[in-house]
Length: 91
Image (cartoon, rainbow, N blue to C red; front, side, top):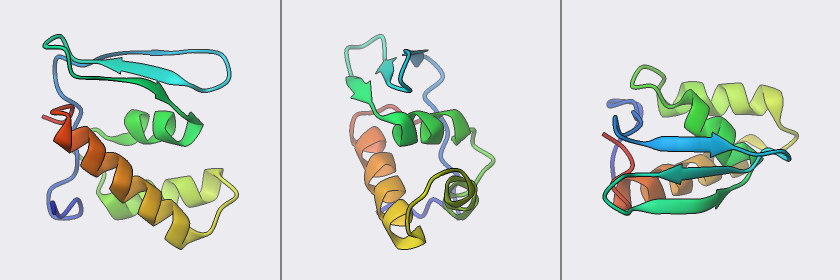
């Protein structure tokens, strides 16, 4: 498992994405890896992963913006980042 605090996540440089009304986003990588629908929290995580912000910093921001327990947000962020990594959407 990647340590997202030691190595902050960064979007794949070839990734394209489009946000839709309601906060959902589609993320596409030209080689065919994609996530069709990302919920509003996933959209916000995608916006925040820039290769600079650590997992902890991303979770801190989300705790301020969403009404959820910190442990749940941390779990969701880790799962989402792991999914992005597995689908080669981080670079």
